[in-house]
Image (cartoon, rainbow, N blue to C red; front, top):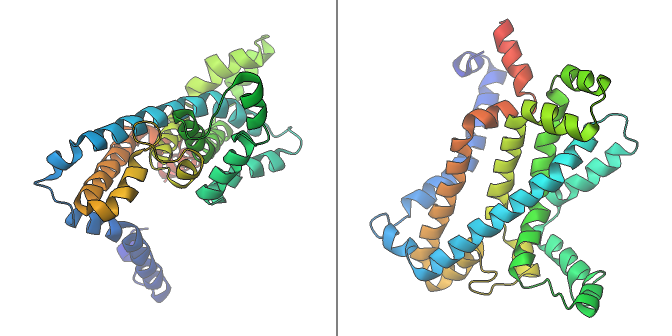
Length: 279
């Protein structure tokens, strides 16, 4: 049913109006950002050495966080997708917590875990001389903490929607669970993995609260683009706007590059396509 047809009834008109308002809430701030962008000076502003340094660090740490999320998150999603797992609801709740937790609280939690007086940080410092907070590793861990749930939930949804007959056949023939996951299941849910990785990367790229709390803001070491934007808002507002637009364009570019895989990897997309085909 098209939007104009929906709007013919009073109730449908209200729903369409609310949908328009909801779209405006999401789109108008971005329109304001684009209108305020000094487009003629944009190349010069983003070519500044400090901006390029922060951008390089952001891309590197977000890439590392995404790789770590793939290594840890795909097996976790595979475990959650099995209905025979006891207390799966508890594990899924724990995985979802970073989505609803204020990022700065996540940074405090990481600091209390890995700080010099933290639960594990004291041991790392005393036994191995390793200090994690306020390093580039701390940036990656902060980004991983806030972005991992996006990948896990996307991959779990793809696994639940996938046809399990080939995996069951491989298990019947004696294949190990690791082999089935690597050679049968993952190729079938590759769009879901790509969608989760894209979400994970873009979320890590924009992380601020946990990073500034756990890693600080040291140029070249922990000052990522979001932190550089925040610091530039007072000293160089035009540069802050330019960096914001750059982050926006990077995020949109990642999603557009994976648009086919993105739509195919979303939970329920297969059912939606089947429904359209049936009609």
